Structure formats: structure tokens, C-alpha cells
Length: 287
Ligand SMILES: Nc1ncnc2c1ncn2[C@@H]1O[C@H](COP(=O)(O)OP(=O)(O)OP(=O)(O)O)[C@@H](O)[C@H]1O
Ligand SMILES: [Mg+2]
Image (tube, rainbow, N blue to C red):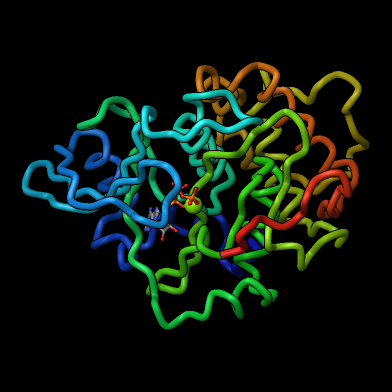
């Protein structure tokens, strides 16, 4: 398998670095998030939604998480009410399907204020200059820029990038993603218009398989044998259609179709998107 943008083959990159996650690995984190008892200990005051900092414990394991109850979501003009938590969960599932480990472990579950999204707290390296980071050509940001193009992220601010003590950069706050219309709004335009590399096309091909109903390419999308890099591991990495099934209920069918269409477009154009011109390309405030 070819190397990923981080220089580590996707199947060698753990989905979560324990150093950034209170010592938990991805499986331990998910087990804790699903079964743990949640105690709210603070509210993240900068957040515009009810974004709560919590302790979570199960079987003697104690960790921290962010809990965003659906009923604390602010109303938005362009996204239907009560759908942001589901979009955060959908973004995590897409991140997992890419193997890039961008979004911290995230689940949808009941909590002290009802159903919501619960995401593992990531410790951050406070010495990292976020402004300088977002202007850099760090290969991890390139991977996040591609992820954002796939999920149609309308809010990739600097504060939605978390540099962990391990050096891994995580992406958070994916409540305004997956709109059926182009909403890509991000600080990460460094690679706009640049050609996608073979490993990035391979990743997109894996996503296409994971999103297809049958595992076959959609009609009319079949390519010449040597047109795209081969990815023989792809079906094993993500069984055909599994992602599509998991997204049902989190996104509308139209939004799932739009996700497929964005992936097809990236595979056809083989370039990072450029600002569309009919939508502010940079989030405000940017941090
Ligand atoms: N999983 C996480 N790990 C560590 N810190 C987090 C995590 N999730 C959120 N935070 C911190 O909390 C802040 C607010 O979270 P987030 O941006 O997700 O909330 P929000 O309600 O969508 O806010 P806004 O709409 O203002 O962006 C983040 O900028 C970050 O500092
Ligand atoms: Mg935010």
C-alpha cells in the first residue's frame, strides 16, 4: 500500500494516539464513550452551542469528553434543526473509513440533557502556534483539507484544529457538514487547485467503495484499468456499502448522494477544490 500524506501507511497509523487521549486507545475510548457515566463538569464558554466538558467513567476507567446535547443546538438558517450531532457522528464515520484518524472518537448517545454527540477530549499541545500552523503546508493539514472537501465542511476554523502532544493534528466541530450544496468554508486553502496524489486518489476510491450500494462503481463511472491506482485492500478495509448503511439516519438520502457526488467529482477532477466564488471561502471569525 502506498504511503499516506503523513508518511505512514494508513493501516499503520493508529486511529487515536493514546498520548493525546488520556492514555486510551481507539477501542478503549469508544467503549468508554458508549458505556460510561457522564458527569458535566463545565461549559466551554466560547462555544455557540451548549458544548459541555464532562468526566466519563466506566469499570474504573475515567476519561474526559465533550457532550453536545441536541437540544442545546442553536438554530441555523441553512441546516435543519436538531441535525448537528448526527453530522458530527457522520464526520467521524467518514474519517474512520478513510483510515486517516482525523476526528476523535465520537458517538451518539443519551446524556444528562438528552440525546447528543459525545466526543473524546483531546489534550492539546499549547506551544503550537495555530496561526502559523494553519498557514503552513503541514501534510496532516493537507489530509484534513481533503477530508473537508469530502464532508463539505462549512466551518474549518483554526480553533477546530487540535494539535495533540504526539504531533497528531485532529479536526473537531463538524456540526455544519454534509450540506447538499457546496458550503466549503475553511482556512486550509493552501492546496487549492493542486493535483491529488496517488495515495489520495486511493483513499477516495476506498470511500467510494464504502459508500456504494453493491461495492461496484456506479453506472457510467467505470474507468480504464490503468486510470486509477489499484487498491486491492480496499474491500477488506471497508466492506462495500458499510459506510452508506451507517450514514442512514444521520444524513438525508440527498446528502448521502451529494457526498457520493463530491467524491466522484474529486476522482474525476483529481484536484483539490478552489473557492467557488458564491460562498465566503473563509469562516468568520477565523479562529
Ligand atoms: N474533542 C475535543 N477535545 C478537546 N477540545 C475540544 C474538543 N471539542 C471541542 N473542544 C474545545 O472546545 C471548543 C468549542 O468546541 P466546538 O467548536 O466543537 O463547539 P461549538 O459549539 O461548535 O462552538 P462554535 O460554534 O463557537 O465553533 C473548541 O474550540 C476546542 O477548544
Ligand atoms: Mg466551534
